[in-house]
Image (cartoon, rainbow, N blue to C red; front, side):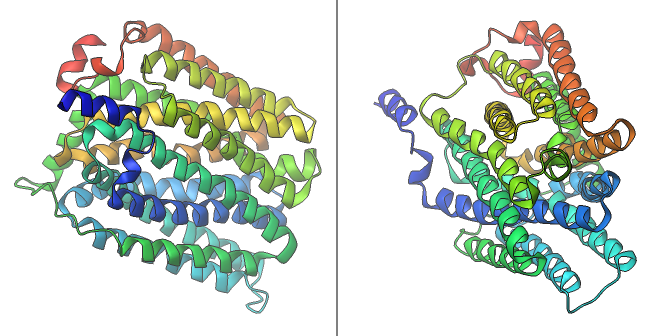
Length: 428
């Protein structure tokens, strides 16, 4: 009977959604991601309008990545030992405060000079980066507690779909609202969605901490790092994603490509940002019915290769509609990678270590987009925009090929072959 029940749950595309706690979690994730993604587009467009300098866009990613990486391990330790609901409320309140500051100082009524305004904006981005260092480990810990382990692949797919749907609507809304109504209206919408996300947190049940530290914080953090490095499959997946996203972070150059190369303005930039997310969410919905977990490692390498090819074609395109298509493909391949990696992480991580393992994940992956944005902005400054995008995509392909050569023995593994970290190392 138990085996039959498990088979039926695996066939149920909506299995994870039948848990009320998981639905509340998705609502919180959706509204916060909408605001965050919208803010990313609006800030990029606004700062580029002020400076017309690719390096100014690079500093956006750098200002958020540095604090996020620096605080990540401590954030994982706090996430493991703290009550999750209260911690999330503090994180969201901090992001809300930073957004309100940016709303105030970007308003025409504030009449702040560029020399003063830019440091303020970068400072608030830095503070949001600090909050993100706690956000990733906390949300990862919660998801592991609100659905059964056998539903992790389905839950990871729906969680990623929620994120991707918000990533479609947020950038599109950002480009359209900023292009038609300006920065003040844009930030008013951003602040409103952060408030809604805060309200969603209130509907989550209080989860007691699963980790009570008995040793020093340094020893606890070291334990989390050692756990990841003992699991060679997890380490390989994190490294592959880190370097592919780092060199494939050319989406950060969208304002330059939209305004200076394709001449489609702020609205076009919003549609371009949304195209990648549309590809992701469509693929995510397909994966709820047909998950890519029959041979996860093989499929992960295929997805990263497709991601790199899409980035190269996006950089070479001179047609707005072809660019949208290539960005759609980039998002589709990226979504497959996200689901596979998230499932591997959830399956290999024990409950009492989820925060610290997620913190290591954040150091590898959580800030790779921002570091990739810095890399793309810097290379665009040095070698111009199109060569910078093509270079990034080419490096992604090279990394996928090197990973393939080093992990050939993982290619035949199925989902059932994925075992706890201390056992999988012999298979790598």
